[in-house]
Image (cartoon, rainbow over all chains, first blue to last red):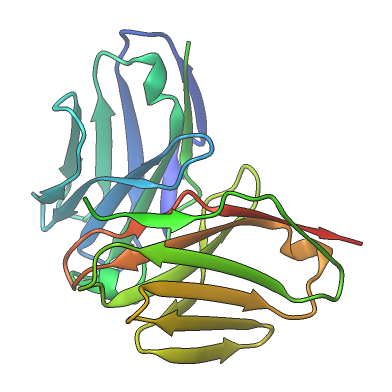
Length: 114
Length: 111
């Protein structure tokens, strides 16, 4: 139990649609990181939010965007869905610089794009 | 491009044996190293972290780090069928940089 909750756990969308995934941080954590894990691959860093500002971004196109709210919960939005966006989306909350201590993920949101 | 390499497996070991999982990384400046266990359909779970050269033991798990060879390994002693999972190696270059993951090694422990 990491204290990080994600919703929805599973969802199915069609190509071209938009999706919003949500993450509730563990109490006291001010940083949220999002990762994408395609089938058979390791998680890939999408971006990180610290105190409501984007604080680093991986190699993902602008149609991947996010928000962090004053209570440090977060959203990941993906526009114009493509088939390759089908993946497990993972959220981890932490204190800043905690990557050095490892990240603890929520249960993930599994997105299927048809 | 920072890379973390793992043999995808599957690695099959009999119950009670030692499972040895290996990982190499490209960024010589990496400072923190992690092993995650991922059961099918679940999210990755952090099981070991190591920061300095040598061995670190936690129960049946031992992580080994050799920074000169840019090599990290995980040993699982007395392997159990419940250890069957994919094991992901992750590396952090420095404090506020994202974790870089390998593709994982699938371990199968045969009863």
